[in-house]
Image (tube, rainbow, N blue to C red; front, side):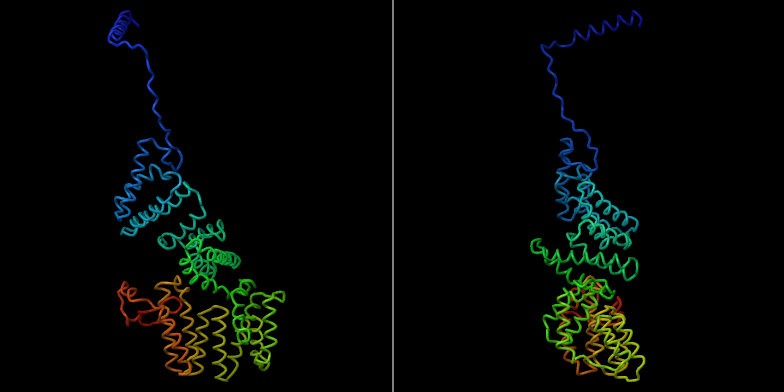
Length: 478
């Protein structure tokens, strides 16, 4: 540095010193508390600076206020701020995730552009993943996410993806799995087995888990205050799972005993009931060690030996014996062989209808049950009983054609009532039974408000889809 520059610097320092007020003591300024920036995926209020905390808390309050009055646009702005700053709020509450799902669902449903609709759906699914990041509970959230996919965003997810998510929920939670999993997973499980997308072993595992979940849920429903919800489940899932009885050895002795033995206890002297329940338990693999099976066996020997029809040797006798031993598939094959080999029209009609009943009652194959019932009706004119059975097939199809309640499960009653009315018209001997069935099931038809919202009216033609595929007309329960 030159002497000139040194002189100038010294002079400036002198001037600065001369202009600065003297202080007796230097007091250090308190250091302001500055929170380190949160690095994790889910900040809480405690992780924010005071100003950020105030902004986040205000956003939480305002988004809830706007959401209450269904102002989704304004609510979304504040919700987005709240979730950006503190998605974990105070570390305990998590309703913000459910509120976000409501907001995304609104924008998805309102949007008309298909690509933008998909974007909202993807955001909803990502929010479930974000919730797991913040609060864990992976198995519960998997069930919630699958439920939302199934009912709200199915256009963007195939059944196997949804099925696997439900499996994850059940694998992790066992019999304490959320009630909302049961009905949709039951449908996917049965459909997957029927279409051979899963093995019988896998279907058996999860069908029995579903039965455990239902048993536990119904036992706890009063404490959980959700018995009405379980009533809806009880009207669907058990009947849907019952269809799997058509697979031999699918359910064990305990299943058949708990389900059918009470029929014997209610009618201990009735041979038809004794023989039917005996065959069910035999089909379920119950052996001599089963007390219930032994009771049925003794009752059959004591009360029903004379009542059992003795027939000539051949396919018919073998069919009767096969049925009595719970060999239902072998029985229908032998009955069918007998029908095709006889020229007796009355016997053709009688045993075609019997085959139909075995398919309906024991093998749970409604399509084949209807086929043989129609064959029986063709064998014998003006016979109402086959149409009584077909009506029962249709009336029982609510869980097959819908969720067990609601529109899709109700419209099957129209087709059922048509068959019972036809049976009544052609065969007075079945008029009383047909009338009773019509009166019972008329209350389950859709109501006026249901058809109003679908812009149809009573008397309009209507096609019942599902496996039924029948033309009928619209009627209401009120």
